[in-house]
Image 1 (cartoon, rainbow, N blue to C red):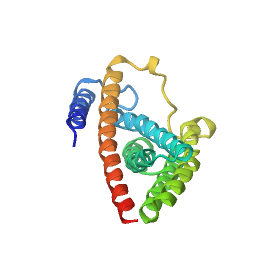
Image 2: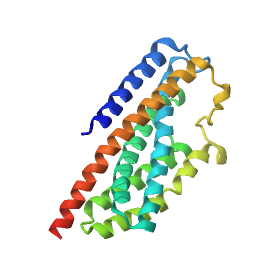
Image 3: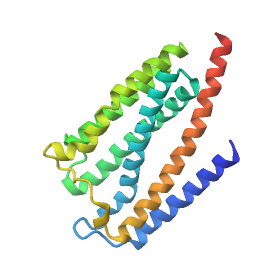
Length: 217
């Protein structure tokens, strides 16, 4: 592991620790939701990061199809796997928030349903990459599947506006008090840096595996 990656991940963990401490111990309770709202200091940054990683996966898929260069496929593999992790975390965090807020762990709400679909789609792409042995077919098929699966990303984002949803709509940042914004953005920076570090390591692992496959072919 390169020193820059270690430094990046160490900084990420420090930021997450600071942001979480501020969110739990310094930021005041929200007027209507009280202390339940504090999960948003992790949930919202996770959502922002997941959208960025999914978009990066889409870019990597397009770049591979147009260029045929293997580094883009390695990045795609890392981003697809991280997308699955982040979408899974969002579903878990959403359930934790929904129980005291809605009275149930899960509801087939448009936002929750479309996110669950997104999780299953990218889990399927990850499985496809695992079972496809030919590197060219694996890269091509997963790139096409990623581009198709990405269609659900804007649907997830706009679901609270398009349908009658229990889920609250996205808040305007300018309307959020400063005490709430600090842990949000500090945790977002920390989670994003941590994800970048993990994806960097995972991309290198994918590259090493590809080298072995090419030698054995």
